[in-house]
Length: 469
Image (tube, rainbow, N blue to C red; front, top):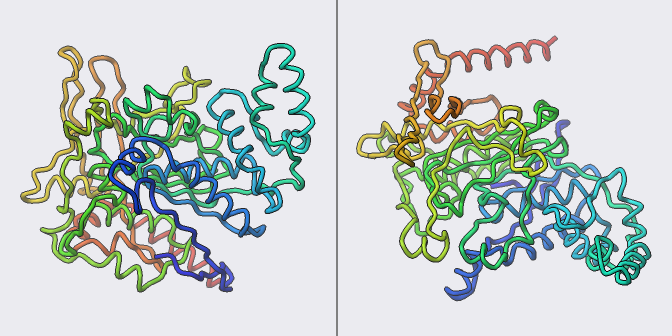
Protein backbone atom coordinates (compact mmCIF):
# COMPACT_ATOMS: atom_id res chain seq x y z
CA UNK A 1 0.00 0.00 0.00
CA UNK A 2 2.94 2.36 0.52
CA UNK A 3 3.84 4.25 -2.64
CA UNK A 4 7.38 4.06 -3.98
CA UNK A 5 7.51 7.84 -4.07
CA UNK A 6 6.06 10.50 -1.81
CA UNK A 7 6.31 14.27 -1.57
CA UNK A 8 7.97 16.60 0.88
CA UNK A 9 6.09 19.47 2.54
CA UNK A 10 7.40 21.67 -0.27
CA UNK A 11 5.99 19.34 -2.92
CA UNK A 12 9.28 17.82 -4.06
CA UNK A 13 9.34 14.08 -4.84
CA UNK A 14 11.04 11.81 -2.32
CA UNK A 15 11.70 8.08 -2.43
CA UNK A 16 9.92 5.79 0.05
CA UNK A 17 12.14 2.73 0.38
CA UNK A 18 10.36 -0.32 1.82
CA UNK A 19 12.03 -3.33 3.43
CA UNK A 20 9.76 -6.27 4.27
CA UNK A 21 10.43 -9.39 6.34
CA UNK A 22 8.16 -12.44 6.39
CA UNK A 23 6.90 -13.44 9.82
CA UNK A 24 8.59 -15.94 12.12
CA UNK A 25 7.09 -19.39 11.54
CA UNK A 26 6.16 -18.69 7.92
CA UNK A 27 7.69 -19.79 4.64
CA UNK A 28 8.84 -23.21 3.46
CA UNK A 29 9.26 -25.37 6.58
CA UNK A 30 7.68 -28.46 8.07
CA UNK A 31 4.95 -28.37 10.72
CA UNK A 32 7.33 -29.15 13.58
CA UNK A 33 9.61 -26.25 12.63
CA UNK A 34 6.62 -23.90 12.46
CA UNK A 35 5.46 -24.93 15.93
CA UNK A 36 9.00 -24.59 17.30
CA UNK A 37 9.40 -21.09 15.87
CA UNK A 38 5.87 -20.25 17.00
CA UNK A 39 6.51 -20.98 20.69
CA UNK A 40 10.05 -19.54 20.85
CA UNK A 41 11.81 -16.39 19.76
CA UNK A 42 14.10 -18.27 17.37
CA UNK A 43 14.51 -16.32 14.15
CA UNK A 44 14.00 -12.96 15.84
CA UNK A 45 17.72 -12.27 16.13
CA UNK A 46 18.28 -12.84 12.41
CA UNK A 47 15.38 -10.51 11.61
CA UNK A 48 16.88 -7.80 13.82
CA UNK A 49 20.33 -8.22 12.30
CA UNK A 50 18.96 -8.12 8.74
CA UNK A 51 16.75 -5.08 9.36
CA UNK A 52 19.53 -3.12 11.06
CA UNK A 53 21.94 -4.02 8.25
CA UNK A 54 19.42 -2.76 5.66
CA UNK A 55 18.98 0.56 7.46
CA UNK A 56 22.72 1.09 7.89
CA UNK A 57 23.46 0.44 4.21
CA UNK A 58 20.64 2.67 2.96
CA UNK A 59 20.44 5.49 5.52
CA UNK A 60 21.24 9.06 4.54
CA UNK A 61 21.19 11.86 7.14
CA UNK A 62 17.76 13.46 7.10
CA UNK A 63 15.93 10.24 6.23
CA UNK A 64 12.84 9.37 8.28
CA UNK A 65 12.56 5.86 9.72
CA UNK A 66 9.20 4.05 10.01
CA UNK A 67 8.97 0.66 11.73
CA UNK A 68 5.91 -1.60 11.57
CA UNK A 69 5.23 -5.12 12.81
CA UNK A 70 2.72 -7.63 14.15
CA UNK A 71 3.28 -9.96 17.13
CA UNK A 72 6.94 -11.02 16.97
CA UNK A 73 7.33 -8.50 14.18
CA UNK A 74 6.07 -5.89 16.65
CA UNK A 75 8.77 -6.98 19.09
CA UNK A 76 11.33 -6.76 16.27
CA UNK A 77 10.19 -3.23 15.40
CA UNK A 78 10.29 -2.03 19.01
CA UNK A 79 13.64 -3.65 19.81
CA UNK A 80 15.15 -2.34 16.57
CA UNK A 81 13.82 1.14 17.32
CA UNK A 82 15.33 1.14 20.80
CA UNK A 83 18.68 -0.09 19.51
CA UNK A 84 18.72 2.56 16.77
CA UNK A 85 17.95 5.38 19.20
CA UNK A 86 20.51 4.26 21.80
CA UNK A 87 23.48 3.33 19.59
CA UNK A 88 22.63 5.00 16.27
CA UNK A 89 23.35 3.93 12.71
CA UNK A 90 26.72 2.31 12.15
CA UNK A 91 28.71 3.07 9.03
CA UNK A 92 28.86 0.11 6.60
CA UNK A 93 32.53 -0.49 7.40
CA UNK A 94 31.63 -1.16 11.05
CA UNK A 95 28.67 -3.49 10.44
CA UNK A 96 30.78 -6.56 11.16
CA UNK A 97 30.74 -5.42 14.80
CA UNK A 98 26.97 -5.28 15.08
CA UNK A 99 26.36 -8.86 16.36
CA UNK A 100 28.68 -8.22 19.30
CA UNK A 101 27.20 -4.79 19.99
CA UNK A 102 23.72 -6.28 19.86
CA UNK A 103 24.56 -9.02 22.36
CA UNK A 104 26.00 -6.44 24.73
CA UNK A 105 22.95 -4.19 24.35
CA UNK A 106 20.59 -7.10 25.08
CA UNK A 107 22.56 -7.94 28.22
CA UNK A 108 22.29 -4.32 29.36
CA UNK A 109 18.55 -4.06 28.61
CA UNK A 110 17.75 -7.15 30.68
CA UNK A 111 19.99 -6.09 33.55
CA UNK A 112 22.73 -8.72 33.24
CA UNK A 113 25.80 -6.65 32.52
CA UNK A 114 26.92 -5.22 29.21
CA UNK A 115 27.23 -1.58 28.23
CA UNK A 116 24.40 0.84 28.91
CA UNK A 117 24.70 2.85 25.70
CA UNK A 118 24.02 6.57 25.50
CA UNK A 119 25.00 9.12 22.89
CA UNK A 120 26.56 11.38 25.52
CA UNK A 121 28.91 9.12 27.44
CA UNK A 122 29.63 5.85 25.65
CA UNK A 123 31.18 6.80 22.32
CA UNK A 124 34.72 6.85 23.73
CA UNK A 125 34.03 3.52 25.40
CA UNK A 126 33.02 2.07 22.04
CA UNK A 127 36.24 3.37 20.46
CA UNK A 128 38.33 1.70 23.13
CA UNK A 129 36.54 -1.63 23.25
CA UNK A 130 39.49 -3.70 22.01
CA UNK A 131 41.99 -2.56 24.62
CA UNK A 132 39.57 -1.91 27.47
CA UNK A 133 37.68 -5.16 27.07
CA UNK A 134 40.85 -7.22 26.77
CA UNK A 135 42.51 -5.65 29.80
CA UNK A 136 39.43 -5.94 32.01
CA UNK A 137 38.87 -9.53 30.97
CA UNK A 138 42.50 -10.51 31.63
CA UNK A 139 42.52 -8.71 34.97
CA UNK A 140 39.26 -10.23 36.11
CA UNK A 141 40.35 -13.73 35.14
CA UNK A 142 43.07 -13.41 37.75
CA UNK A 143 40.51 -12.18 40.28
CA UNK A 144 38.00 -14.86 39.43
CA UNK A 145 35.67 -13.01 37.04
CA UNK A 146 33.31 -10.06 37.45
CA UNK A 147 31.51 -7.50 35.33
CA UNK A 148 34.63 -6.74 33.32
CA UNK A 149 34.93 -10.38 32.33
CA UNK A 150 31.26 -10.44 31.34
CA UNK A 151 31.74 -7.34 29.19
CA UNK A 152 34.95 -8.69 27.73
CA UNK A 153 33.29 -11.89 26.59
CA UNK A 154 30.59 -9.95 24.74
CA UNK A 155 32.61 -7.11 23.23
CA UNK A 156 33.97 -7.36 19.70
CA UNK A 157 37.74 -7.38 19.33
CA UNK A 158 37.91 -4.60 16.72
CA UNK A 159 37.62 -0.87 17.18
CA UNK A 160 34.58 1.04 15.93
CA UNK A 161 36.16 3.18 13.20
CA UNK A 162 33.51 5.89 12.80
CA UNK A 163 31.07 7.40 15.27
CA UNK A 164 27.54 6.01 14.69
CA UNK A 165 25.01 8.51 13.34
CA UNK A 166 22.39 9.38 16.00
CA UNK A 167 18.82 8.95 14.73
CA UNK A 168 15.25 9.34 15.88
CA UNK A 169 12.30 7.20 14.83
CA UNK A 170 9.48 8.97 13.03
CA UNK A 171 6.90 6.18 13.57
CA UNK A 172 6.66 2.87 15.36
CA UNK A 173 3.37 1.23 14.38
CA UNK A 174 2.62 -2.21 15.81
CA UNK A 175 -0.16 -4.72 16.12
CA UNK A 176 -0.18 -6.80 19.28
CA UNK A 177 3.21 -6.77 20.99
CA UNK A 178 2.63 -9.66 23.39
CA UNK A 179 4.25 -11.23 26.43
CA UNK A 180 5.10 -9.17 29.49
CA UNK A 181 8.66 -8.82 28.20
CA UNK A 182 8.01 -8.55 24.46
CA UNK A 183 7.63 -12.19 23.37
CA UNK A 184 4.99 -14.86 24.12
CA UNK A 185 5.79 -17.14 27.05
CA UNK A 186 5.00 -20.86 27.27
CA UNK A 187 5.91 -23.66 29.64
CA UNK A 188 8.75 -24.55 27.25
CA UNK A 189 10.30 -21.08 27.18
CA UNK A 190 9.82 -20.60 30.93
CA UNK A 191 11.53 -23.91 31.76
CA UNK A 192 14.37 -23.52 29.28
CA UNK A 193 14.82 -19.74 29.50
CA UNK A 194 14.92 -19.84 25.70
CA UNK A 195 13.45 -16.37 25.14
CA UNK A 196 15.29 -14.67 27.98
CA UNK A 197 18.08 -13.37 25.77
CA UNK A 198 15.55 -11.51 23.61
CA UNK A 199 13.42 -9.99 26.35
CA UNK A 200 13.25 -6.28 27.09
CA UNK A 201 12.09 -4.91 30.42
CA UNK A 202 11.61 -1.30 29.42
CA UNK A 203 8.31 -0.64 27.64
CA UNK A 204 8.70 3.13 28.02
CA UNK A 205 8.79 5.61 25.18
CA UNK A 206 10.93 8.72 25.09
CA UNK A 207 11.22 11.70 22.76
CA UNK A 208 13.50 9.79 20.40
CA UNK A 209 10.32 8.23 18.97
CA UNK A 210 8.02 10.90 17.54
CA UNK A 211 4.90 8.78 16.93
CA UNK A 212 3.89 5.40 18.40
CA UNK A 213 0.72 3.50 17.54
CA UNK A 214 -0.45 0.08 18.75
CA UNK A 215 -3.56 -1.96 17.87
CA UNK A 216 -4.65 -4.32 20.67
CA UNK A 217 -6.98 -7.35 20.77
CA UNK A 218 -9.68 -7.05 23.43
CA UNK A 219 -10.83 -10.69 23.26
CA UNK A 220 -7.42 -12.40 23.46
CA UNK A 221 -7.18 -14.35 26.73
CA UNK A 222 -4.18 -16.61 26.34
CA UNK A 223 -1.82 -15.97 29.23
CA UNK A 224 1.20 -16.28 26.95
CA UNK A 225 -0.11 -13.37 24.89
CA UNK A 226 -0.46 -10.73 27.60
CA UNK A 227 0.00 -7.35 25.83
CA UNK A 228 3.15 -5.25 26.22
CA UNK A 229 1.60 -1.81 26.61
CA UNK A 230 3.62 1.31 25.89
CA UNK A 231 3.67 4.11 28.45
CA UNK A 232 4.96 7.67 28.68
CA UNK A 233 6.58 9.23 31.70
CA UNK A 234 5.22 12.69 32.60
CA UNK A 235 8.19 14.54 31.09
CA UNK A 236 7.51 12.99 27.66
CA UNK A 237 3.72 13.29 27.74
CA UNK A 238 3.62 16.23 25.32
CA UNK A 239 6.65 15.23 23.26
CA UNK A 240 5.50 11.89 21.83
CA UNK A 241 2.26 11.21 19.97
CA UNK A 242 1.15 7.89 21.49
CA UNK A 243 -2.10 6.11 20.60
CA UNK A 244 -3.09 2.59 21.65
CA UNK A 245 -6.50 1.37 20.55
CA UNK A 246 -8.50 -1.71 21.60
CA UNK A 247 -10.37 -3.65 18.92
CA UNK A 248 -12.79 -6.58 19.09
CA UNK A 249 -11.18 -9.91 18.26
CA UNK A 250 -8.33 -12.24 19.11
CA UNK A 251 -4.60 -11.85 18.51
CA UNK A 252 -4.73 -13.27 14.97
CA UNK A 253 -7.77 -11.23 13.95
CA UNK A 254 -6.32 -7.88 14.97
CA UNK A 255 -2.96 -8.57 13.34
CA UNK A 256 -4.28 -10.20 10.16
CA UNK A 257 -2.96 -13.64 11.03
CA UNK A 258 -6.20 -15.55 10.37
CA UNK A 259 -5.65 -18.29 7.78
CA UNK A 260 -8.00 -18.66 4.82
CA UNK A 261 -9.73 -16.15 2.52
CA UNK A 262 -12.54 -13.96 3.81
CA UNK A 263 -15.36 -12.74 1.58
CA UNK A 264 -15.25 -9.06 0.63
CA UNK A 265 -18.96 -9.01 1.46
CA UNK A 266 -17.83 -8.90 5.07
CA UNK A 267 -15.45 -6.56 6.82
CA UNK A 268 -12.88 -8.44 8.88
CA UNK A 269 -11.34 -7.04 12.06
CA UNK A 270 -7.95 -6.97 10.33
CA UNK A 271 -9.37 -4.52 7.75
CA UNK A 272 -10.50 -2.20 10.54
CA UNK A 273 -7.13 -2.28 12.34
CA UNK A 274 -5.22 -1.76 9.08
CA UNK A 275 -7.41 1.22 8.18
CA UNK A 276 -6.88 2.66 11.68
CA UNK A 277 -3.10 2.34 11.40
CA UNK A 278 -3.06 3.84 7.90
CA UNK A 279 -5.04 6.84 9.13
CA UNK A 280 -2.49 7.43 11.90
CA UNK A 281 0.42 7.68 9.45
CA UNK A 282 -1.45 9.29 6.53
CA UNK A 283 0.40 12.49 5.74
CA UNK A 284 3.61 11.14 7.22
CA UNK A 285 3.70 8.49 4.48
CA UNK A 286 2.23 8.54 0.97
CA UNK A 287 -0.01 5.64 -0.06
CA UNK A 288 -0.50 4.00 -3.44
CA UNK A 289 -4.13 4.84 -4.33
CA UNK A 290 -4.81 1.76 -6.48
CA UNK A 291 -3.32 -0.65 -3.95
CA UNK A 292 -5.27 1.05 -1.16
CA UNK A 293 -8.55 0.60 -3.03
CA UNK A 294 -7.79 -3.07 -3.69
CA UNK A 295 -6.85 -3.85 -0.09
CA UNK A 296 -9.31 -1.58 1.72
CA UNK A 297 -12.48 -1.30 -0.34
CA UNK A 298 -15.80 0.17 0.70
CA UNK A 299 -18.38 -1.72 2.77
CA UNK A 300 -21.93 -0.63 1.99
CA UNK A 301 -24.14 -2.93 4.06
CA UNK A 302 -24.56 -2.21 7.76
CA UNK A 303 -25.70 -5.76 8.52
CA UNK A 304 -22.44 -7.25 7.27
CA UNK A 305 -20.09 -4.79 8.93
CA UNK A 306 -17.65 -6.36 11.35
CA UNK A 307 -19.12 -9.88 11.53
CA UNK A 308 -16.31 -11.85 9.86
CA UNK A 309 -14.88 -13.40 13.02
CA UNK A 310 -12.27 -15.99 13.95
CA UNK A 311 -13.14 -18.83 16.30
CA UNK A 312 -11.53 -18.74 19.74
CA UNK A 313 -7.94 -19.96 19.13
CA UNK A 314 -7.66 -21.36 22.65
CA UNK A 315 -8.02 -25.13 22.82
CA UNK A 316 -6.82 -28.03 24.93
CA UNK A 317 -3.78 -28.83 22.78
CA UNK A 318 -2.78 -25.17 22.63
CA UNK A 319 -3.08 -24.74 26.38
CA UNK A 320 -1.05 -27.87 26.99
CA UNK A 321 1.77 -27.21 24.54
CA UNK A 322 2.04 -23.42 24.30
CA UNK A 323 0.22 -21.44 26.95
CA UNK A 324 0.97 -23.78 29.79
CA UNK A 325 -2.74 -23.89 30.55
CA UNK A 326 -2.93 -20.23 31.61
CA UNK A 327 -5.83 -17.99 30.65
CA UNK A 328 -5.83 -14.27 31.39
CA UNK A 329 -8.48 -11.74 30.44
CA UNK A 330 -7.18 -8.42 29.23
CA UNK A 331 -7.73 -5.33 31.35
CA UNK A 332 -7.94 -2.06 29.38
CA UNK A 333 -6.95 1.05 31.26
CA UNK A 334 -5.22 -0.76 34.11
CA UNK A 335 -1.83 -1.68 32.66
CA UNK A 336 1.17 0.09 34.10
CA UNK A 337 4.88 0.25 33.44
CA UNK A 338 7.03 -2.81 34.02
CA UNK A 339 10.35 -1.13 34.76
CA UNK A 340 11.77 -2.91 37.78
CA UNK A 341 13.58 0.20 38.99
CA UNK A 342 10.23 2.04 39.21
CA UNK A 343 8.02 -0.75 40.47
CA UNK A 344 6.78 1.36 43.39
CA UNK A 345 5.75 4.32 41.23
CA UNK A 346 2.07 5.15 40.94
CA UNK A 347 0.59 3.95 37.61
CA UNK A 348 -1.56 7.07 37.28
CA UNK A 349 1.59 9.13 36.81
CA UNK A 350 2.21 7.41 33.49
CA UNK A 351 0.28 7.80 30.26
CA UNK A 352 -0.79 4.89 28.03
CA UNK A 353 -3.28 6.84 25.87
CA UNK A 354 -5.68 3.93 25.39
CA UNK A 355 -8.98 4.18 23.53
CA UNK A 356 -11.75 1.73 22.60
CA UNK A 357 -12.55 1.45 18.90
CA UNK A 358 -16.22 2.08 18.00
CA UNK A 359 -16.30 -1.31 16.27
CA UNK A 360 -16.56 -2.88 19.76
CA UNK A 361 -19.92 -1.29 20.52
CA UNK A 362 -21.12 -1.60 16.92
CA UNK A 363 -20.39 -5.33 16.95
CA UNK A 364 -22.14 -5.75 20.32
CA UNK A 365 -25.23 -4.10 18.78
CA UNK A 366 -24.93 -6.04 15.52
CA UNK A 367 -28.09 -8.15 14.94
CA UNK A 368 -27.22 -11.82 15.26
CA UNK A 369 -23.61 -11.25 16.30
CA UNK A 370 -24.15 -12.51 19.86
CA UNK A 371 -21.03 -10.68 20.98
CA UNK A 372 -19.96 -9.18 24.28
CA UNK A 373 -16.25 -9.11 25.20
CA UNK A 374 -15.40 -11.28 28.20
CA UNK A 375 -12.84 -8.64 29.20
CA UNK A 376 -15.69 -6.16 29.73
CA UNK A 377 -18.12 -8.59 31.33
CA UNK A 378 -18.79 -9.34 34.99
CA UNK A 379 -16.29 -11.93 36.20
CA UNK A 380 -15.70 -13.62 39.54
CA UNK A 381 -12.11 -14.77 39.81
CA UNK A 382 -12.57 -15.73 43.45
CA UNK A 383 -15.72 -15.88 45.57
CA UNK A 384 -14.81 -12.66 47.37
CA UNK A 385 -13.34 -10.72 44.42
CA UNK A 386 -15.84 -9.45 41.86
CA UNK A 387 -14.89 -7.33 38.85
CA UNK A 388 -17.88 -5.13 37.94
CA UNK A 389 -19.23 -5.15 34.41
CA UNK A 390 -18.08 -2.33 32.18
CA UNK A 391 -20.68 0.16 30.99
CA UNK A 392 -20.89 2.06 27.74
CA UNK A 393 -21.89 5.69 28.24
CA UNK A 394 -23.17 7.25 25.02
CA UNK A 395 -23.15 11.05 24.99
CA UNK A 396 -24.84 11.39 21.58
CA UNK A 397 -27.47 13.79 22.94
CA UNK A 398 -24.79 16.36 23.65
CA UNK A 399 -22.44 15.19 20.88
CA UNK A 400 -19.63 14.70 23.40
CA UNK A 401 -18.55 11.24 22.27
CA UNK A 402 -18.66 8.07 24.35
CA UNK A 403 -16.69 6.34 27.09
CA UNK A 404 -16.39 2.86 28.53
CA UNK A 405 -16.34 2.86 32.32
CA UNK A 406 -15.68 0.30 35.01
CA UNK A 407 -16.61 1.23 38.61
CA UNK A 408 -14.21 0.70 41.49
CA UNK A 409 -13.99 -2.82 42.91
CA UNK A 410 -14.62 -4.14 46.41
CA UNK A 411 -10.92 -4.94 46.67
CA UNK A 412 -10.11 -1.24 46.32
CA UNK A 413 -9.13 -1.00 42.65
CA UNK A 414 -9.89 2.43 41.25
CA UNK A 415 -12.59 3.15 38.69
CA UNK A 416 -11.46 3.13 35.06
CA UNK A 417 -12.64 5.26 32.15
CA UNK A 418 -11.48 4.69 28.57
CA UNK A 419 -12.69 7.01 25.81
CA UNK A 420 -14.02 5.74 22.51
CA UNK A 421 -11.82 6.41 19.49
CA UNK A 422 -13.25 9.02 17.10
CA UNK A 423 -13.16 8.22 13.37
CA UNK A 424 -12.57 11.53 11.61
CA UNK A 425 -12.71 12.66 8.00
CA UNK A 426 -9.95 15.13 7.21
CA UNK A 427 -9.56 17.17 4.02
CA UNK A 428 -6.79 16.08 1.64
CA UNK A 429 -6.38 12.74 3.42
CA UNK A 430 -7.30 9.18 2.42
CA UNK A 431 -9.61 8.70 5.43
CA UNK A 432 -9.26 4.91 5.32
CA UNK A 433 -11.48 4.25 8.34
CA UNK A 434 -14.28 6.55 7.21
CA UNK A 435 -14.30 4.94 3.76
CA UNK A 436 -15.11 1.58 5.35
CA UNK A 437 -18.16 2.90 7.20
CA UNK A 438 -21.63 2.26 5.78
CA UNK A 439 -23.88 5.34 5.74
CA UNK A 440 -25.93 4.12 8.72
CA UNK A 441 -22.78 3.75 10.84
CA UNK A 442 -21.47 7.14 9.72
CA UNK A 443 -24.69 8.77 10.94
CA UNK A 444 -24.45 7.08 14.36
CA UNK A 445 -20.85 8.12 14.91
CA UNK A 446 -21.35 11.63 13.54
CA UNK A 447 -24.15 12.38 16.00
CA UNK A 448 -22.16 10.84 18.83
CA UNK A 449 -19.07 12.97 18.18
CA UNK A 450 -20.65 16.18 16.87
CA UNK A 451 -18.76 18.39 19.33
CA UNK A 452 -15.40 16.91 18.28
CA UNK A 453 -16.22 17.37 14.58
CA UNK A 454 -17.31 20.98 15.12
CA UNK A 455 -14.07 21.70 16.93
CA UNK A 456 -12.07 20.07 14.12
CA UNK A 457 -13.90 22.02 11.38
CA UNK A 458 -13.49 25.31 13.24
CA UNK A 459 -9.78 24.63 13.62
CA UNK A 460 -9.50 23.80 9.92
CA UNK A 461 -11.42 26.95 8.91
CA UNK A 462 -9.21 29.09 11.14
CA UNK A 463 -6.08 27.55 9.58
CA UNK A 464 -7.38 28.19 6.04
CA UNK A 465 -8.18 31.82 6.92
CA UNK A 466 -4.66 32.36 8.27
CA UNK A 467 -3.18 30.89 5.07
CA UNK A 468 -5.32 33.15 2.85
CA UNK A 469 -4.18 36.22 4.80
